[in-house]
Image (cartoon, rainbow, N blue to C red; front, side, top):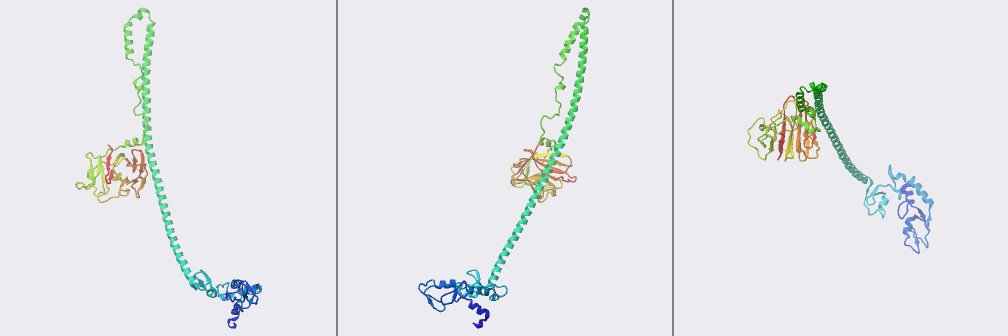
Length: 464
């Protein structure tokens, strides 16, 4: 024991001979030896008549356990002072044995000292150095931390993508707001023009009514003056003596009867008539647009070989096979399109197209210089302003395309062109609803022609 040194000697004297750990709640028995209360009670739990000492084997007829408070105080002091350095810098001590916790029990998942490792409770458990266990746990935690970092990066990417989608949707909503405002302004301009036209017509009618009134009143005034003169003449005649009164009486009566037969019994016809041009009902949007109605026919020299035209040039349909048609520089050879013969380089014009049997089509206008050879894109950048349908979705063929909300697919599409203002607007003619209005375009002095593009099974008919 002298070879153990002061710290080892103190640890040996402060240890229970049963559990080999520092005394826990030390008690003295009949022979004077000290044990942990729990250890000696477990040792005697099967004893009934004699209670032997585990160290000296001296037996007593009765259990005698006296708390050794002095020893308990010494152990607490030893744990705080003498045994603190045994753990090394930053280490911890086993509260039971006062040894450094240098091992890790994998079964209990707790640090243990070397004495605990040899105790019956841990003897069969796997134990590794605490540094190795800590390093293994650290690597596992770092692996999980990396997984969480990767997940965070993915979530940050999803967040940025969602923010981008929201920004794109907001931009599309803003574009739709601008489009609606532009359409409303277009309609307001159209209504203001119609208002000026109707007010001018009504002002003209005012002047005509006043003129007719003055003419009729003047004519009636002259007739009244003539009648007054005749009345005075008759009254003067009645004042004449009998022989003068009867003179020429037959001629006078005959002349008066003829005048009575010629005079109308009603007011002059001019007063009973309603001035021409006075509106009798409200003017609708469709009626306003039809003031600019244009009569169109399709140009067979521009029709794609799969498009068949009627003899009058008013109808076009899609066919399954290509027709044998002569080569022409104006003909579309890849895109299934056809242009009208009539082009516009000034003024305002309106026409309607009836859509039959088709879920893929486009209707609009194109510059005369639009490419005819190879596949073309229907968009303003190449000189085409159009609306169309793809499946069940109606859309304006801008860049990118803009969906158009309608209760149903349009059966008759109206196209309005104001060349000087660079305006192209589309309407659902049957429901008298605006579909889409393009921002002002620069046609550059070039003629603009009506354009039709047909998909499989589609058929168009131009309004007469």
